[in-house]
Length: 198
Image 1 (cartoon, helix red, strand yellow):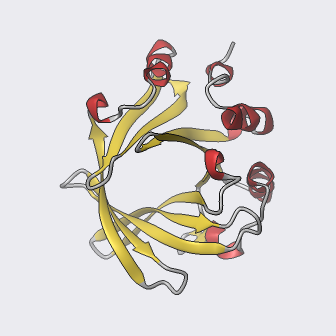
Image 2 (image 1 turned 90 degrees about the vertical axis):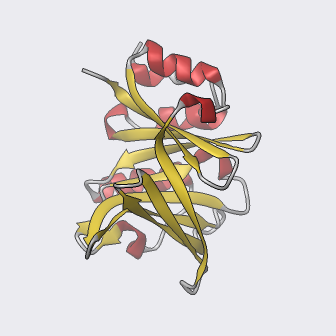
């Protein structure tokens, strides 16, 4: 059984994603704990229009063309919060490193109405190498700045406080994984690749 298939059984939404997305198109999974609620995001590679079609099949909605584009061309990766596809708002994340002056954009996040794909808000992740964190800016639909926060990466497992079974699985299959957390929120992340470490 592949590493990919061993991820089945944790969440029904994740099982569905594994059935839809071929293993070679998956970039990584993001397990998120927000308070006492767990979320899981599936992020895929974006190298073609076929990848975009695959992502929109996974989501069940279409996104505006601008989300797939950056100043360097097409984004490299895109993910969706599988757990929130039936909610009023779900999160979509894009990854493509862009340098603006002395600052580096790691990627963007979008709050999307999963019923029709309409944008409800967005955020930008600025990478601060010195502080080992992302400085996150939140914007409304008119792109007015409404909030700021920090996401600290490469944190210890003690901040996770999510299901230990997922961490145990990552260790048992020798997967690449790391932890991060929000600075001012009870929110932590386990980021897992599906390829084993060398």
